[in-house]
Image 1 (cartoon, one colour):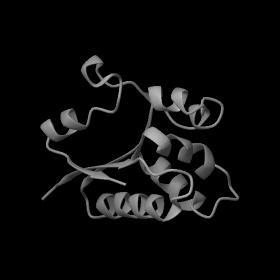
Image 2 (tube, rainbow, N blue to C red):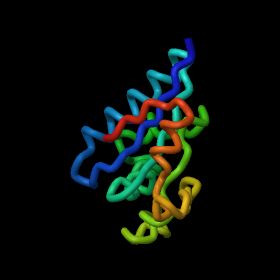
Image 3 (cartoon, one colour):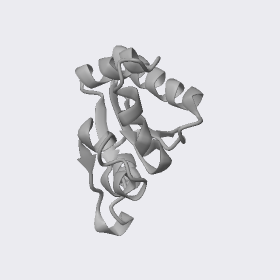
Amino acid sequence: MNNKHAFIVYAGEQEQGRVFHALTHALQAHERGNTSELYFAAEGAAWPGLLASSEHPLNTLFSKLQDLGVLQGACESCVIAFGHEQSTGQVVPMIKGPECSYGQIDILGLEDEGYRVWLF
């Protein structure tokens, strides 16, 4: 059975534990043979820029998810709003959601496609 999971990180820079759990569960779902996608939005838009540093303790896990194609990207409007164009904007694809969601990641669209959405 191939379940579909979308993990969305909203956690701010002081919430590394929540980010660790999102990354871990995204990898676990992938390794179980499920469809697994990882996104970053709102204050969580800072994380790809932070995690890309080889010195960050979660870098290995983050890089593995990138290599596996699990990491989808970050909300473009969030990256811009929180000023992360020069960090996150250089590390992951920017995602622009539909106008009806004001450009945010289309959570309802993911659910319509059969994804279980997990918010961290």
